[in-house]
Length: 308
Image (cartoon, rainbow, N blue to C red; front, top):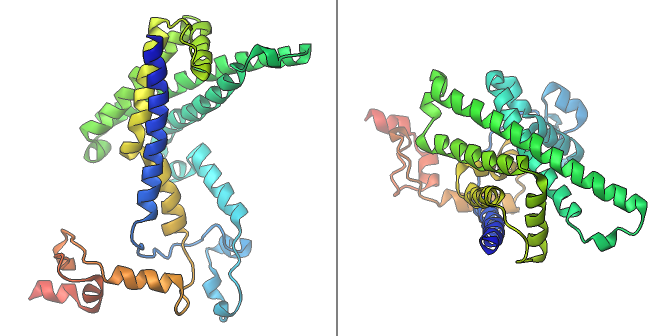
């Protein structure tokens, strides 16, 4: 069983990383988006951000270099990632279960990091201070993992309830959404049961996995929890749960994209390439039948053609 746990753990991590890289590659190669022109953009001058303006307000904006304030971008992203600020502002009833669920996931990442540090060889502890630090890491890892599991289970159960009981969410709920939440509940319930039996078996498996020690004892419940959690990890990038990657591109390549379009510049080249694409949209008013290019569609009046 120990070998199976190790293979599941490394296999799940490998599939997760490969899936994330595939997602990044896919999003990075998508055609140029249609600019949204939504303001304020966080990387604008602070004064303009306050009133929702942009550098295009300046009469000679093309004569001076564009100032980009990356610090404000990062603070905006951190507020959204850690505290789900957008959900708090626009869908507050859904904020609490989502916050519990996501913050639990962040604690899982923290507990894994603490677990890896606490699984380092004991020979590195040469002093009483080091031994104290080691004990503190073990204790912090245990409590971070327990709190994380409780938060994830609470958030997932509340989200599952909302998906089933809230009429407003029925149009947005598919069997896959319910399956994903049930998958999280099952995996973290098993992990929690394994931790409640005592952290020693879980710690032994993690330490054994770091050194690929086949002599480590694999208790049944912790092993099943690790295997199921590894399968979940491998599954996430290939579903819409990989929105944590899509969000980055949505922010930087769509919502916050205010780059200039100088003559013979890279953006002009991308636009020319996109205008040659032949879209196939179901909306009849677009006339996107796969034969017309974007240039043809943009130069015509689809509404007039529909009326004919």
